[in-house]
Image (cartoon, rainbow, N blue to C red; front, side, top):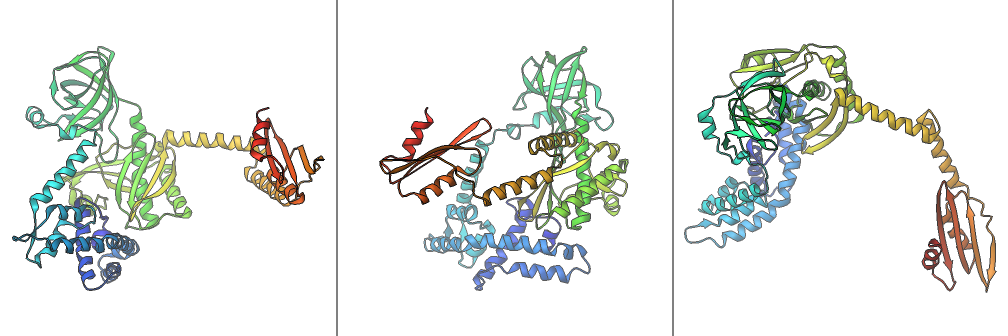
Length: 532
């Protein structure tokens, strides 16, 4: 558990994260049977981190994060463990002659109480029983069907076998160019059934013999752009994705196209902005590791033309000082105008060189390595800027938590960085105008002091008072002060009162009304006056 957490694996519902969860929950259940009703394993993993720190330095660096994430996972399971055990023990009393445990109950333990199936089976072995696997699988399949019904995408349900038999992987030339002459190999509908031609206003997928469009991957969105035929715009490229080694682009058809047509494929200008954000993401990860420690590892990312999002392993929120250091480090590398360098080499050689890789990710024997001199070196198949100076500037706009042990940073660079600065400058100018002070901080302090003083010093109420049938009538207009407070003061001063005070602020008029021991209700009086 300690090693997996320190290497960037997190408790999850699937994959290696689920294996980690199963290991911990099985151990926690044994502790529960021994009478340990509170979290305890986090202390054990802390000791492991200390004992192995001489040979595995990253364990010591990650100790705080590892213990915190382990503790939170234990707390989550302990919340449901007792209820789940009650259901399990009750169900044991209803075992049939063959000692088959109800599959529906096993699924409920899994789905509602967080009991992995192998944990339930492990508990049943001591009773000579086992789970009705068919019943469990039926429940699981029903859940999968419900999930699929709520998911609107269709390509995951498509049968690609015919396409893979008919077409070899197409050539990607997007590293070298953003425009090329390409032959249309085929068109496909939303279910990836091949069609012979494409007509205006249709949305279809296209497979080009060679393509400059980068397919969504590595956090980066797929390229958009245009297809031209006979010097005319024939289709808008809305997105690009890779399925089973084939690069498909989603098209909005403007001019009729057919299989075999020669087209000019041109990537949109937003490619450069995506590249800026992708390269900035690499610099960001290096900066985070320098500021927070080498335990930081990527847990997810999104790279678009107007923003980036980077998820990483860390136990707690970054404070303002840490965020400022990270931002400064990234900008420092941008201002150095570092050239990017791309190499292809064996995986082991890349790791020996210090290239960062995603833990648990499967890589080919030969990998693509992207580096910016000493600032960053990573295994990456994405599009990057040729020089960090092209990124322009980098700004963190938000830091937040995603899940236990995983933080998220959202940032902008390039044109989006300029646009943000422009909007903030506009807001600053508006603030100066409203405060009537070029020094915004001084203006705010002055305003706060003014409000403070106005609240301290009671406003003089020079309001006319008339007595009618023993009731004091007060109606007047003031230019400053809290009119509700004025009404309260009048009510405390007079035994019988009808009071209405108006206040004019700019072009807006507000009123406050109060009644005490008088034959009319305040809201009725106020409503009648408001209609005048």
